[in-house]
Length: 241
Image 1 (tube, helix red, strand yellow):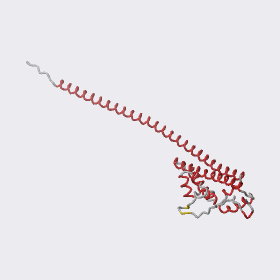
Image 2: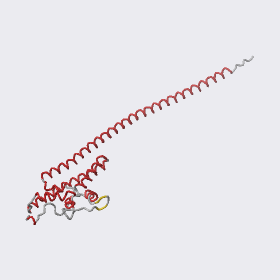
Image 3: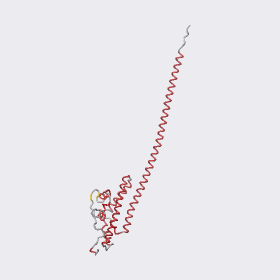
Image 4: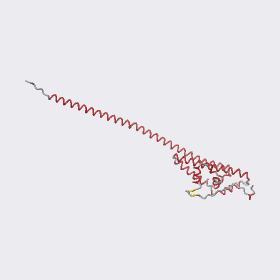
């Protein structure tokens, strides 16, 4: 009599083993993926955190630089304004001490009246006195043109550095000098190459500014009157020698 052993328990056991193995593998893969995702998230948050801090530091640095530049520009503009006012202050001091050259600061409408008053105040004028004050006149004219040259240079630098407020102020100063000082009849003569030839003392940019702003107006030639004599002429009718 043969005994048959049922294979059902073995098969059932095998199936359970395979299922447990698959579940374990699935769980391990899921757990691995979860760990990887957590690592990626942690890595991402670390990246964001570190870069956010760097970005904030860059913003703070940029604001600090911008604030420093603004302060520098404000200080620079104030310094330029002080320098320009010092120009007029120094010119006034020269006119007070050497009133014989004050005709160079006179506007065109008053020029000949001031010139004639200076001539009358210096009476009588001899050759020695004439030579002395022609030298002083040329020195004061050079002083005025030196200030014009300086302001033109500062204006160029303000444009290059992007200091708009300073550039605007200096441009208005240039316009003021050209209209009030440099269109003076005697100043025109002393600048001209056929007169005092002071134009030869200055660089091309300054000469260009002068020609554009003094001799022209909106691109058109301006009819200007020059004084070739000045206040130091010798009048034979008054027995000046």
